[in-house]
Length: 337
Image (cartoon, rainbow, N blue to C red; front, side):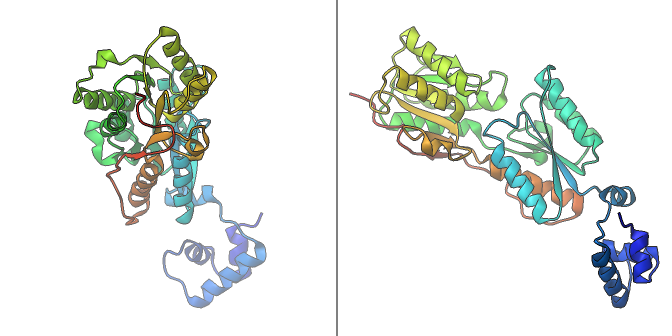
C-alpha cells in the first residue's frame, strides 16, 4: 500500500509538506497542494487512521454503548448517531452487553472496550450502571454523554425525557376514554426510567381517586415473551380490567397476541397502551398500537452533537428538552359500558 512518503516523492515535495496538505493544517502553496492531490489520486492513497491518530491524538471516532443490539429501542438511536457522525466525516464504534457476567459488569467492560479503542468521546445508554459508576467514568474520561438517564451531578452530559410526565400521559389517555379498571405490565424493577413512568402513571390515576393498590401490576421484563406471560397471568388471576398499560411496546406486542388468543376483542373489551414508539412496528400490529413516543433518536442525536462539539471544536446546535407524546392508534377506545 502506498505511504505518505510515496505521495511526497511523486508530488516532488517533502513529507512535511505532503502531511500539511493532507491534514489541511499549516502552510503550503497552491501548487504544492495540486501536486499532492494529483499524487494521491494516481496512487489511490488512503491515509492511515492509526498513524494519524498517533500524531494528532484524535481518532475521529465516537464510541456508543447500548445494552443490546437485538432490541428495537436502540436501533433509531444508533442510526441517528451514525448518520450524524458520517455527515461530519467521523465514525462510530459500538459495543453492547454480552456474556455471562452481570449486566453491570457487561456495561463496565463495554465502556472500557470503547476507551481502549481510542474513541474521542463515548455515548452511554444503560440502566445497569449506577450514578457512581457513570461519575467515575466521567472523571477518567471527560467526553461522556448519557442518553435516557438523568445523573444528578452530570446533568450537562445527560439527554433524557421526563418519564414521569410520560407515565401521566398514558394514565390520562385511559381516564379520558372512561377507563377506571386498569392493569399494568411493568418493565425491569431496577430501571430508573421504568420506576419513573410507573410513578407518573399512578400519580395521575390518584387524581381520579384510583389508588395504586387497585391496579394489578405484573413484571414483563421489557420483552415480548414477558408481555405474553404477564398478560396471561393477569387473565388467570381473574383480574378485571378494561385498560392495560405496558411499559414498552415489545411487552404490548406480546400482550396483544395473548389477549387475541384468549378471545378478547380490542379495543371493544380491552384497550392497550404501549411505551417508546421507537419504530414503525406499532403501526402494523392488530389493532395498531397506541403508544407514548419517547424520542430516543433525537436524544441520541443531540448527545452525539455535544460530543462532536467537545471533541472537535464544532458549534452544532443542541436540544436538551424532549417532550413525550401520546400517539393515538386503534388499540385505545372508549371503556365498555
